[in-house]
Length: 259
Image (cartoon, rainbow, N blue to C red; front, side, top):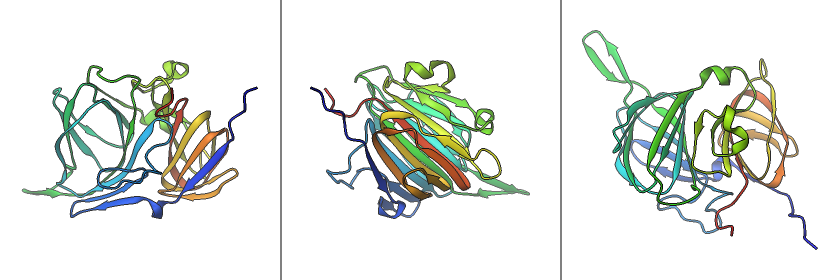
């Protein structure tokens, strides 16, 4: 006789995140990353990286390699210039969904290249604030790829907007595709004056990250910017805005290392 999995909800507060702070970068890691390793905090479901980054003007990540990872970048404020070894080059800004499939290998850079022009003089203007997320692809060794799409109009309509997905159920309403048939990223912009509530998807693994603002989560309570909730065999809870908020929600139907 099979035993039903036990639902579990795990709240991680913003101040408890691992941190990397150097002259040009303020990065907060929801999971083990780089020199920061905690064997008890390596992933949730198929999500291995959820980095909350602020990069100063004129600075950024020099060209570096990746392999066998689906990388989704979501900009909250400012703009980020992307260049890669496939020849893609462009600016990522709020409301633009962007995915890079590292596959057999890709090299890329990400820079804050915002400028302000006054008369005959120009200078770097503002920091860029973005969240970068990595999920495991279905299989290694795929062809590297890149995709981006502006979805500001969909976000303005309220509710959960499916930003990136490999799940067949979202094929007709997904902004960009990822090579992970068990994963989907949804974004909600909530405000007490507009779209006030959304309900979480039900899935074996759900990761809720409050990118900015404050919300109330049914059964959990108040969540502020930087807080995250990891749900296992749970879901469907209602999120309610306490102030204008932006929430990133991963819905996952498999986990790392599952047979």
